[in-house]
Image (cartoon, rainbow, N blue to C red; front, side, top):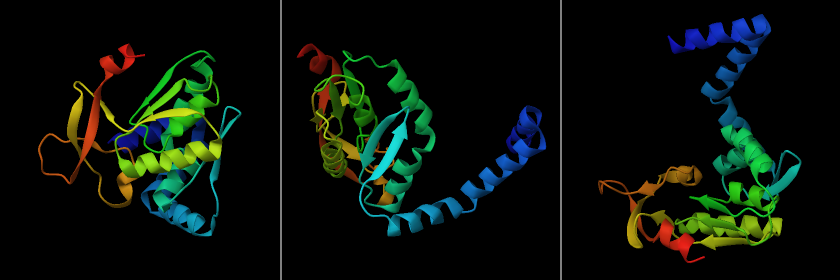
Length: 195
C-alpha cells in the first residue's frame, strides 16, 4: 500500500516522467544493481574518493565496496551535510558523536576553525580509518577513542557483522547476545565541563 501511495505522489508532483524515474530508482536499489555497480567501481578505483558538498571537498579512503558506496554516494546524508555546512560558523565547536570514519567531522572541519572539531568513536577499526581520512584531508580534528554515555568507565559495544561494521549500526550492548568488544565510555557532561 505504501508503494502505491508513493507512486501516486510522484505522479501528482511530476507526471509520468517523475513516476518513471521513481520506478527506475526503486529497481536500481532493490535489484542489486546498485551494489554490483559499487563493487565493480571499487575494484577498479585506486586512491581516496573525493566528495563535494556545497563547494566543500573531502577525501576518504574506502577499504571495502560498502565503504566505497557510502562515501561515493553519501547515501541519504548529502542533504544533512549540506545543511551542516551552511549552519556552521567559523568559531563554532562541533562534536561528531559516533563519528565512524569521520565524514561529518571532516566536512565540519572545512568550515570552522582548526582544533574545534571533536570526533567520538569507540570502535578501533573505525578510529584507524578515520585517522587516515583526517590525515589525507590535512585537518586538525580531536579524536576521542570512546563512546559518549551517561557514565564514565567501560562498556560492551555490540558490533555489526561483516562488512557492515562501517554502517554506523554499532550500539552499546544491553542484552549480551551480540558479538561485543570492550570500549571506554565518557560522560558527555563531564567532557564538556572539562573544557
